[in-house]
Length: 168
Image 1 (cartoon, rainbow, N blue to C red):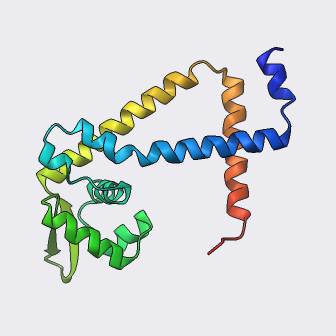
Image 2 (cartoon, rainbow, N blue to C red):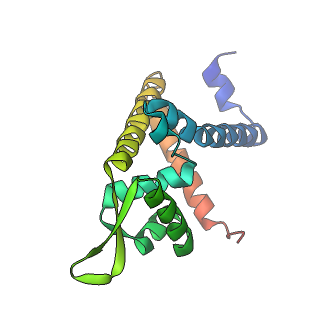
């Protein structure tokens, strides 16, 4: 049976299972990102500093928006302010981030990357560029019509998730 005919007759239950399988595989792939990032950084000492995805995301947030305060980091990364303080302290101790106060606001603390932090930031950007290129190559085997359908499906699925009540 031709693949496109198979897709037209895929039962919703089977499709739901395929989506769950995809999400689990994606989650597993994302959890390996810190180790893949470490492997890209040649300096073992710097590479050992990258602990987990939350730390990497915090470094990314600071690198994109520096100088940035803890409240804004918390909002953008989805952490509590206390969580940002804890991660910030760790990153300062490890030499990846520095804290500073601005002349116009001596009370508030802002974060900036150090050269070592910039190396992690740049390496993470490179990792994402490689992943995006791999994904573009993968998508190259699909027609514009097929990609348009996938895009429409993802927009509708995302909107459906937004309509669902939070489990918090």
